[in-house]
Image (cartoon, rainbow, N blue to C red; front, top):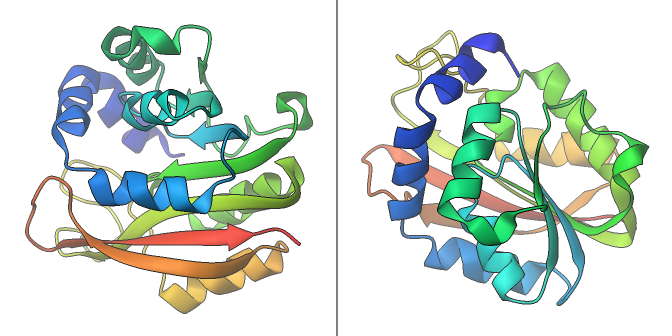
Length: 204
């Protein structure tokens, strides 16, 4: 993940965490619950405030939550003390290695779009390696984001790589993951011009 993107999250960690905590995520959480094996071992990429990891743990999942911003990781610990021992600082894609173990499911909510295409491919390749047989990968990316400039960066300096649904499908297939379900959802913060595509991919 590029330095300008991480710089934004490191410098605005408290504000970002509070914003994430205020979002309406009922649809997202329903999608996660219906997509992942109950009680499974999960890896979260880009945990933000810890909102989703805390929810999944409350539903009986075993979760290791990670984020590329050390400041955001600290906010996750503050907002959700129950994540103590379950959240670590890990940058994508380089931090993903076999040392992390094997998972029944991996999910990434609003994070892959902050990577370059090459980094997205490296991340999804690593996801495939970390998933158990029949493991599942859930990710959420913008289907529409009007504020992103043509050079793929927003006015805050964050990268937003824009791929078509077919583009995401092809990258997943390249690394032996097949998208089997998608759900389009409105923005949880009610922002105009932002729509999300939530995808479930499976490993054979």
